[in-house]
Image 1 (cartoon, rainbow, N blue to C red):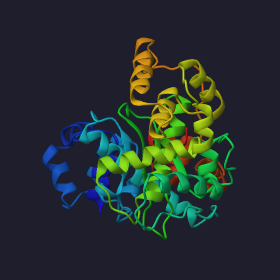
Image 2: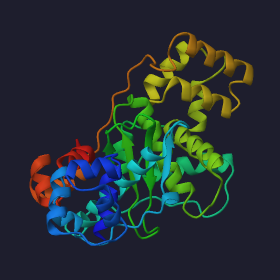
Image 3: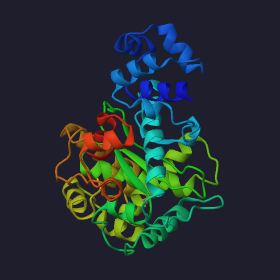
Length: 339
């Protein structure tokens, strides 16, 4: 069990076995043997704890939450590296364990999501997105003022990740479905419009891909369609993107609905409001203006509130150093989760 936790911490910190060995002043074969389940002395464990910022008690807790690699859904760039995927998975596992501990001491909102139980087409995804809006207390024709709060009201715990995740937007998992509590981990530092779509995208995975198995590309397409439909339902989108769509008119729609111009162009194309020729023209215009990297119309970044509130209620503090002392996690991990 110690070895599993040493590997988790090493992957979260994006360290090689050699790097951890040098930081802890032990040998690389020693780290390798520990991760394989070999014995570890108290002195070696204390050295690893000192090098990583985690408590020795953290490494001795026993089995980590089960989180098979394929159970975690990502919104990420195709260029992402396997080491980054491992880092996100490790961060999610320590977050899930912390949430499980907190749930034993404080009450959370009930999980409101009702996943799809059978195959579903594009029209079904549109209908499901409106149903989930209703489950989260959002009117069928209203903009979502704060996606993060809506998701948290639905019993989903959201936490951040900010440590060198340039190729990831978000990840989600529903541990022990249907009894467990779904979580979403999002990468900080992206514009608010991108963040909002990433959160809605992950909610799409949570409701679309628990009881249905689809290939990865289709799952991503479905999750994007759900996320866009969650932010701007079909009828509202058709009205907002009414032909002839221009970057100016789409910028206005972005200011109202909090969804990027690029996503609105794709939304219009998916709904056949924008034909392929116009779609290509608008995308070229975005690129020519440099808006593929930074769009006009600022949408504020949102911040989670549920996990920080749980920590304050349980431990009476929101200071990372104090929370690290009582949870056994490193101050870096605490800041990554709640800062």
